[in-house]
Length: 74
Image (cartoon, helix red, strand yellow):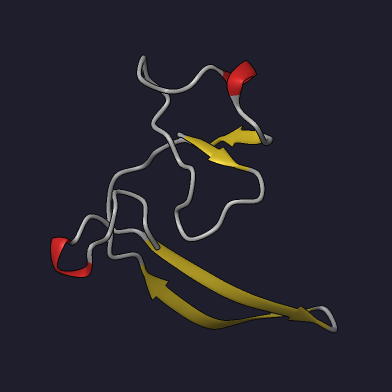
């Protein structure tokens, strides 16, 4: 996948295939990320004083018509 460096909420993500934009034509910096199958989850961690604590988790509801969610909308 091709993702904007300062992206959020699934904005501006492209699958890296023949339909993807040319890198020279992009108006902002992008990076590549390997696409993996399975449930789409995110974790939030707090690091302080040498200790790491997980403080939250979310599930990405991608592509759900009832939520008008796009293919990468978070």
